Amino acid sequence: MKNKIIWLIILLLIPAILFGSLPVYIDCNRFLTNEQNTKFEITYKIFHKDLAFKMFNKMLTSQIEVDFTINNSEGTELYQKDFTKRITSEDNLKFSQEEGFFIDKINAVLRPGTYQFELALMDDVSGKKIIWEKQLNTLPQNNFGLSDIEISSFSRPAAKNKLSNFRHKSRSFLVNPNRTFINEEENNFVYYFEIYVFELIPDETKIKVEVVNESDSTLFIQEEEKLITNKITSFWKKINIEAWQVGTYKLKVAASNPELLDGKKITNQKSFFIKEKTKIDLETEYNIAQYFLSNKQKKVYETMSYNGKKKLLESFWAANDPNPKTEKNELKNLIEQRIEYAKQHYSTLTKGWENDRGRIYVLYGKPDERIERGFDYQAKPFIIWKYISGGMKRVYLFVDFTGQGNYRLVWCKNDENEVKDPQWRSYLGPYFDDQLLE
Image (cartoon, rainbow, N blue to C red):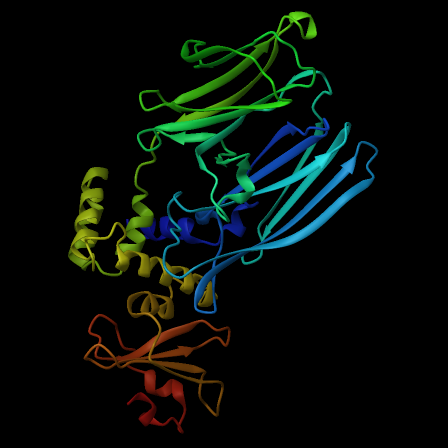
């Protein structure tokens, strides 16, 4: 059972480069300008849990390289730009949950035609990458038209420097490119679309917005007749989905005017999804807590049901929350950061969070004093870590037996939970200075 848990931990925390391309959600929506050119809005979203982070200037940092290219239908390059997006945080990145994410939007205004888009993204830390390619036409240049439908998580009045790239006129809309909403967590979503009337007429336009489920049953419908006096008119609404079941839904838009297109309807639709709230990832939670659980607690944990394990972990973190008044558990966040640091800095023949240096770092953090020596006469490379603060001085001696940077703990002081190697002194050669351990 112990080996099974170890393998589960490895599968959860091993750098994602081993599992293929970078998981990115991408969506493109088209809108017309007053000149009837088409504005392509490409939104991409990456969850923090799918990115690799490293320490940079004392902050966990991830860096995304972006390369955006537009070709015409003959394959001639019309536009190319590459840039870097950096994500940093001192203490609030949540690597094991889908709460944290990076999102950005790229805009391009193009004349009528067919275009080939390519968006290449690479995680600089892990080397994972993805290439999104799409051939798209511009919207038709008719006197009466309809944009694509944008699905967003929320909308709010536009604020200076906040979500500035996600604005439509005076409001900002946080686009949800995967168009997925979590049951029991997200109670609303927002749709946005535009109707274009480039030939002003006195008759009212009929507009119908409808949401149907997989059985084609209508869950939401709104019909109105509106006298459109602008070339471009925006329509948006927040819809409550609290009582809706898990599944796939379609949002349909239809508009018609007796004086335009011989009264024919113009239509568009877009799918979105409601998925079940993911159960707590017990293996990931256990991986964080295991460093502080006693052997007895670990044995009891292995025999428990899912709900029992969940309650044990919740009780453990509740009992070890330095500041229960805050929503986050500062100790848990600290351990998550240490695991990420160990993964980036101590991974050699074994994964950084499971070898000796990684384990000690996760438990106690950065040492107050560090001593390192390379190969010497009859001596193997070694590292000494000293923790002076906290009331008790702890000392750890790591030796590299292979010369490949895989240091193993052979001796320690004031830590009864660690095992000493009885032959540790013989690894250090005849000229080792014992004072280094003081």
